[in-house]
Structure formats: C-alpha cells, structure tokens
Image (cartoon, rainbow, N blue to C red; front, side, top):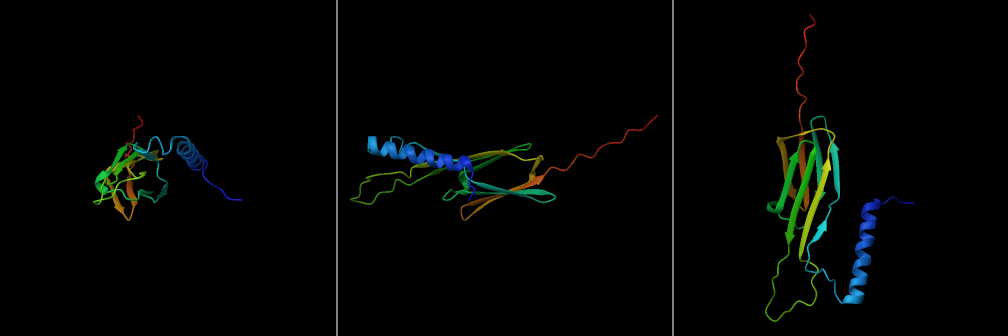
Length: 144
C-alpha cells in the first residue's frame, strides 16, 4: 500500500480526463492557448529562528517570481511564458507549452519578519528562508 496526496492525485486524474475528452471530441485541447495554473509542491522545515520553504518551479525566471508576506500568510505567484520561436520553413502543429502560472498560498504558525527573510531560485527550486518574528518583549506590571 502506498500513500499519495489526495488533492494532487485527483487533480492529475481530472486533467487527464479533460485532456482525453477534449482531444477525442475536439481534435486538440480547446484551451491550449489558455494559461495553465499550477500549484507547486512544497516542503516546509523549521529551526528555532526561521522556516525554510522549498518549491519546485522548473523553467521559471527569478524575475517572474513574486513572494508576498502578510503576517503569517505567504503567497507565491509566478508566470512562465514559452517562446514562440519558429525556424524558417517550420510551422507549429500542436502546442501545449504556452503560458504557465504558478500560485501557492499558505499560513505558517508564527509571524514572519520580512526584513530578515530571503528568497533564492536555483535549478528550478525556489528556497525561502523566512525569519520568525521575535516575540515582543513583555512589560511587567507593578503590584500596588
């Protein structure tokens, strides 16, 4: 027996069925020019001072990635455009590689310090080092 995340498994099955029926009844996918929205898989780990988040974003340029931090909520968006480059004498017969949009949002257990956090994109993996916001120092009440 093996375990597969249900949402990813059902999503893949749904896309496969859509593609099958579109190709069968309409020739090619009706939405072949439309953008494909992807929700990349992610890994989250933590240390005493920070969270580390890794997402697979193959083929995306670092300039196309936007990371927004709002307290504990992290939102990541990117858009990847494929070249329409054609060689002389060639014509496109079928195109699936047009525009892909990556979008993922999640909430962490603790608020994030944006000024102490960083992001890098290497070899198709986006790595976020999200510094935990330090607890505000409490004040002591004097008992009269």
